[in-house]
Length: 366
Image 1 (cartoon, rainbow, N blue to C red):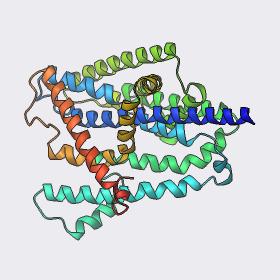
Image 2 (cartoon, rainbow, N blue to C red; image 1 turned 135 degrees about the vertical axis):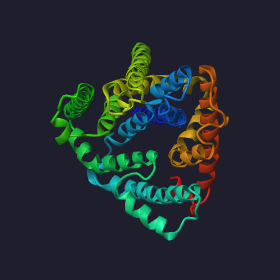
Image 3 (cartoon, one colour; image 1 turned 180 degrees about the vertical axis):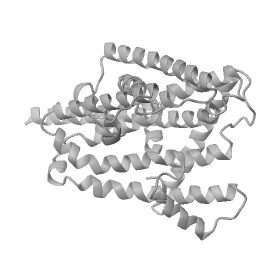
Image 4 (cartoon, helix red, strand yellow; image 1 turned 90 degrees about the vertical axis):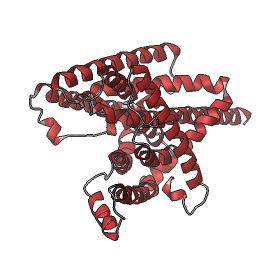
């Protein structure tokens, strides 16, 4: 009996360690989301921005493109893990999670539509609310809310994927491999102008990242130092390639060519999976050396969804530049983006924390 109890304690400790590691991943992911959205507007101003400034924005944009894939991989790591409840109540998560997603999506969609009306110089009306509700059925009203549509699709797929991956990893490996082949074909098709008919008839969107998170949990939940080193080198290499190719194509066309920054491209997949492994390794080391810092990451992680929902309001309030002036050098651009991202993260963390204090407002930032 003592042995059984001991093993149970050990399993509990391992589970807590893994959850703490995922807190670090989520905290980094939400900061990178804010960094990305702080840097990306200048990408569309290639003809009116000094080259060195645009290059710095391009570098930061490329490095931060892992942000949303990290969130999807954390979801796959957690939600595709087998539990007794999954077998007895396969649709429990759908019933539980979808309302927590759809209510904030609808509410914040309306809030952003009302804010747009106000910024455009008129008081919002009931018509704005009606048209916001109508337009939500067609897609995201604000660019960052697309993520909630992606999550909703993933929640609907959970019962199927769990059943498919329950007994063997072969379906998961096949699913991820097929997804990678499809997005690579779609990517090469866009680059070359050749047709790729499978892209029209088969599209797994971001579900491949969900499965990637599941496979990491199965095969490398605690990456070794050598694997982490290889993953870090792969991440850095692909950031350089992504930055260079985006600059090459964009400057040649005289406009921002976004194809290398799309989440479903092979370069971003390699960056994202590599960064996930590196962050898991770093988190495991950090938990042993700095429990205080881990609590800080846990706090950011707990508020990450609320920060995601709120942060564009603050970025628009400061016109995506807290310094209020255009950058004139690469260092100036880096400083401006960093200060904008840090101030946005801090402000939105406080706002989310306040919203989560009472049950009357907690549903706005679940």
